[in-house]
Image 1 (cartoon, rainbow, N blue to C red):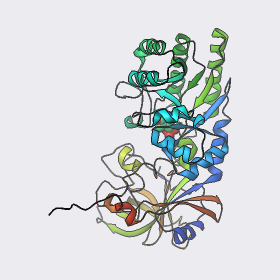
Image 2 (image 1 turned 120 degrees about the vertical axis):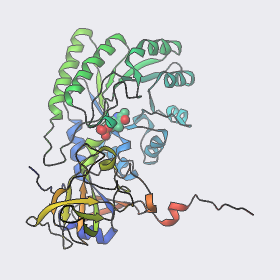
Image 3 (image 1 turned 60 degrees about the vertical axis):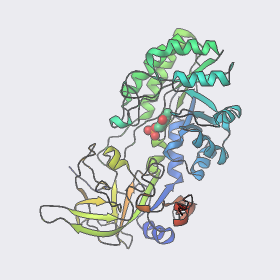
Image 4 (image 1 turned 180 degrees about the vertical axis):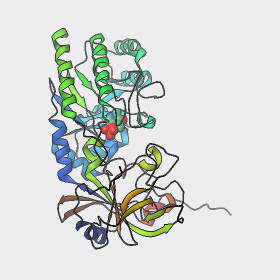
Length: 426
Ligand SMILES: *Cc1c(COP(=O)(O)O)cnc(C)c1O
């Protein structure tokens, strides 16, 4: 049964206030939700210690990174550039682990400052060994299976290029010996939105690897922990999974006498539900009695591509322009973004990137607000930026109700075009 969705942390009356003060589209991040999520994850049962690395690619805005640092988090970065953004936010390089597809120029300086290196291929391991012989290193393994919300988010298995293919472990050990590297950490990130049963299978698999590589002291299970976003989503008990993983680590200790330190790298879990995207309804159109009612908003692919890229439905909430929620006059509507492309539609058929389906929403009129929830992660950081030359949206932190801080200004036209040069033909 379809039901209407509700706001996650904002109160209805805050919406027009925020929209008038900062303009729309606007990202709002709730600090107390971030804190609550971080505390939940850092208290997951574990046998011999736990490090929570915030996965920076979810949302790398400076104030967000600084807030996670203040909470005591460590960091997972997917590029040298993200590492630099951490350093610029005041984060100690020693708290950063680099797990990247591309190792860009400048990585050596970051490693000299203490950033840890996770080799995602034999080539990366060789590259690291040549530059930093006689040090500690981490290796990422593709166990040959994975799990994620959709295939595009599943980073284990034969279709996935991430990490060393599991049968290359012996070669990695030989390479490590050649450069006198100590393999200290085994890293596996099987996918975003994985099933916990597959994660537990991954743990058992990883513990076998740790038996073969006696120098390993840290087991890093990556990120991908599910969140309950839609009314129809189940509740996920990550503490219960953590307790079972802890038991597996204790059994490993009984067998080997080795206490493995656990690391996790949640991005989505820590930040997704802590962010809301406020947009304004700019138009309402219809394709007739056999068609649909469409709400057009002043945001879209330029702020969030998850619906179009993954077929992912986000909780959508209509708030009347006066700041109240309408709960009686509800009907099925489609929500479209402001980009001139048919794919800018926020109401995909679930898990299907090729089709659309209306959702149950309060009947929206022009100048009402449409809130897209679950947009703290992989929205501001992952979108079709500047398509149609729309400027990047502003970002605000919510410290408490009616207490906000602007953490990123809306982009200007000049900033969009600042690197362009004239073609000087005679
Ligand atoms: C993307 C990523 C994460 C975070 O994944 P979420 O689904 O946001 O939790 C963690 N570790 C690695 C290596 C990643 O690439």
